[in-house]
Image (tube, rainbow, N blue to C red; front, side, top):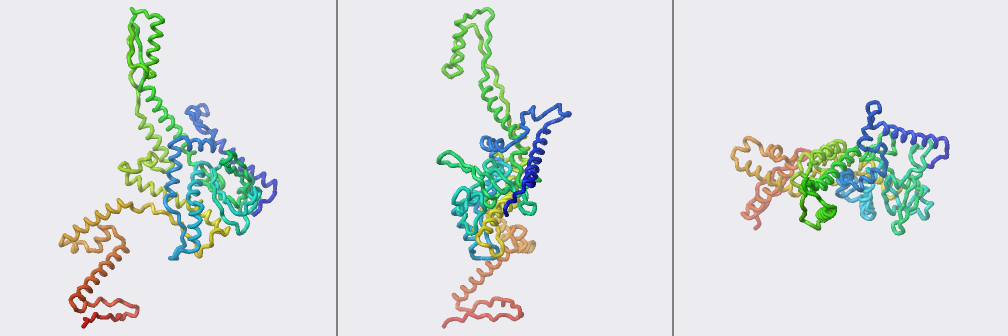
Length: 481
């Protein structure tokens, strides 16, 4: 729908947005205040009161832990193929084939992953739909024409995609949402950029963890910003402490009965300077007793762990994942399970409904994707599937258990075979049924082969049951003349 030109309503929308921002600023000013305003903890500890996109982006680019907080959930969320399937249809459908081709040629999954990261850094992110109906720059500000083809997708963050105007018609379903965006498109070849007004129909607007607003979400680093600043102080202070403490310097005591001339003092200073710059390893002097100061180096591990604990508590990311030890011998089964649950919840609650389905539904609406016959399902890589090494270990354990079970003559009297398969080997009902079917088939083939070799009729298999209750006649093998 088009935006109506109602200045009064536009003013109300702008006032609402301004009030929201003012409310956030007022809240920021009250942070850290105690004792009736006499003590400002934030000021004392150096925490900024007002945070903007540039603050989060700078931390993401330069600080290791900030990048890990954003990248690791996003990369885990989008790992593996991203497929769209129509349920209950065994053969590949036109919808599935079209999506697969678009994903392959346009790299959709990779761009959605980038969009997810940009959205996590700021309050929102947008995905620009590059359609074939744009011939000149002014065409960006018009609605997409019917029959246009999707040429490319390009993600932008909050800084590069500013909201310019809003839908002001109260009867419009998009009331209060952006009508036009101003997007900064960089020209890498020339090193310049251009600002283009873009109609909302050409943009997918994504937010994460929104509260009252539908167009602004919550930056991932906002709630842990103080903690990552503390980590910077601890880790940086530890490096500085080691740098200074590893070679703390010397203390010189001059013999009270010794008189140093100015030339001797300058000579001693030159020797010390050369020593500090690795140009000399021996100091030659008289009348001065030089002693190296004791090293003073503390272990920051406990302090770093305390900050990581707080970050993990807020973000839900296990500490082992944050610290990069989720692989190898240091990993734990509990951390691995919690991490998989976290990623699966992120897929179910954010990535699929807020990103994938929003894009796919828009492409179906534009005719880029055909309409599925009975809806579609987003198929992700199974996070809980066992690795090849784990499968081998499980197989070895089951084989050992089965061997012990079959070697014991009284095992079947105590535990029936089906119960053993289900409760001791952990097989499902379907797996047990399949095993029994395969076993019966092997036995039947062995009996048939034996009968042919001996030239006799094999035993008749039990007659299968049919709805009428009458047995189905079976054929007997007749010995060849």
